[in-house]
Image 1 (tube, chains in turn red, orange, blue, purple):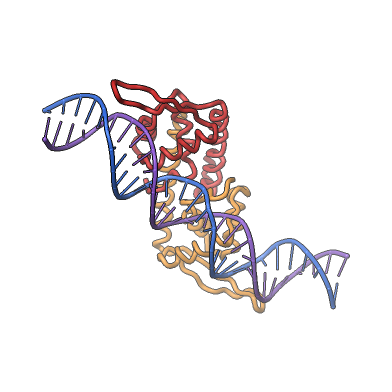
Image 2 (cartoon, rainbow over the protein chains, first blue to last red):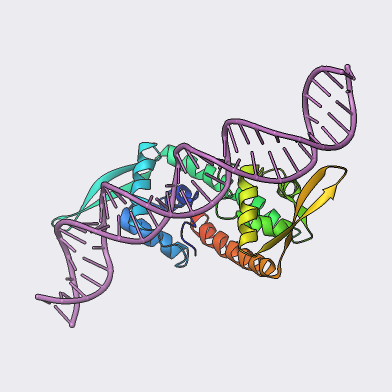
Length: 110
Length: 110
DNA sequence: AACCAATAGGTTGCCACGCAATATATACCC
DNA sequence: GGGTATATATTGCGTGGCAACCTATTGGTT
């Protein structure tokens, strides 16, 4: 997968992996990697700013979680607005793939 | 369709619409629009530089065509390398949609 | 004749956004 | 003590499609 591949679709990915339940940043990276079969390897410089942005937009909420003695995790969860946004992202994705697919592979009505 | 949507997939679109036969810039824009059902409206600032780039890369070749008295069109056609590249773009597209789709809509093995 | 939309080609500069690089610290295993 | 995995975060860069702009021809309408 070429670099910059997720451009324009990152928000949907983040919202999607948070749908089943809250996760912290590091776990989000591994979740995206696992769910994509290893194809998508997000970097910290990619997701941490993105998570902040989504929280600022009200689509995510975060809280610190303690693990062990001194270890902290910032745990993100979907807000209601986030859930609605995820639905929108899924609709957009369908439109997008349909449009590009129709041009790239005409006559393959998939 | 949000602006910047085709980012990263433009080359494939251009190569794909040129597969059936040569077209000039303006016709490429309408072809992409038609084949996408009106979803993709490329701008001249998008395709003219892109066509030049693809020609420089050897994926396209161009020639001036006269139409009417004083009118000229720059006609682009696929080279052999362009045809091979198109195959690669289609493979990339499949990988890409599979990866993103798996994260965005898990359990919908499509 | 005047006007306008469609056809046709082109350039320039902006800026959003993911990424590479870098930094810090804990936890665990050998 | 060394190496790897876990965990969070910031900074600066490059890219690439797009908005905005420009010129010119063609053909239809009024």
